[in-house]
Length: 245
Length: 262
Image (cartoon, rainbow over all chains, first blue to last red):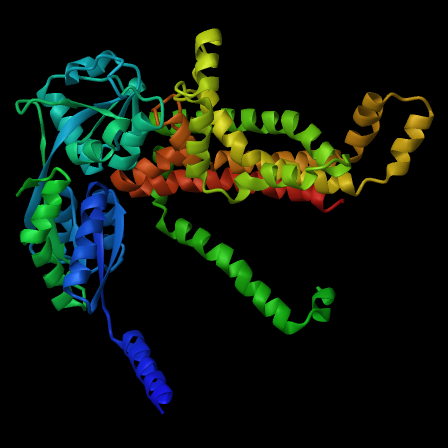
């Protein structure tokens, strides 16, 4: 009898777990958020056990294009306003809020063998890896280079589709340097050397997050956004090197 | 036309669905094209440079595939040695490997920071990454399996008696190979070459990872298309159509010349 009871109990528990409705939240997020958002997603699921978070990481401009072409995530977190503003205009997303900032650095090979000390050094430094001009990291890099009055001939620039590809051209490939976010360079650890870009030349990246208007998982989407902006989210973002918004 | 009646209706119906699966995305591209500016989109400086680089590199990759792949295919078809299946698997691996992974693997082997790449750089002054040679290499890596697999199948089907006859008449093994074996599979050499060319022409991931994306130097058409998708989607579609037209042209020519006769 006890065995029967316990089997029934186990069966009930198992089916209860399987049947428990899990609200899915699909989040489109900038490549530079990969590490931080993966952690935030896990923490969020621990706090909201009825919710399952799924991510799609790519360059913000590519994500914006996907949303324009009717991809329907619940939340969009971009690395710049330029990718999200057109979506706001066509009412594809709700009004975004800023949740983090990031700064650019120059990433070089470990121990900086090419002696890169500033943006100016990039104009004569072999091949420099930059993001595509329309990806936020590419646009920010262009801003920083123009602030520093540095021009790099396009014949020495390799264009990557997103920031992690831009960095791996240095960590895994033969690019002399890459202009990437501090957070990505930090995450690469000893695989690259970080050269700071002074504030006068640096471009500060801002990260807006918004609920996608067509989302049917309104409550879960709002909860996720609130979580990102809350204490736990901010703590994780800071750990990755993001600045508060 | 009468012959189709002998096929079971269900098979034909599923085949039609299969054909539609390939045709619909192509029609989608055509639908998205902006015909009024097509000529302009295809003749911008960047597009022409990318087109030229693409064709030159794809031809290079095809030649390299034929030079290196013909002996390989012969060895796989005729050689009887231990590890032949392993060798075949190795040669065919790039068919199933994600191209970006192929690019990372090439970097591990040939970047200036790898032992071999460093040797090439220090002794010969050659840097494969960020160069057209690197593009050719990345394309060859992913395209050569198409050539080898085509030629191996053809070589396996060759009647050995022709080669035996030539050998008994005193021809050296090399002479038998070049004068008897290769002419017998010439159609497949061409067919495999065209397949490899078409694959090389469309290569994206391995090229981007290994050779980078430098305008005028390593930026082939597929890489240009990828960048344009965000700045100018219509131009991206125009260039995609050009790629499709070239590859389709090559494959159609291939069918008429060799596959039908064979």
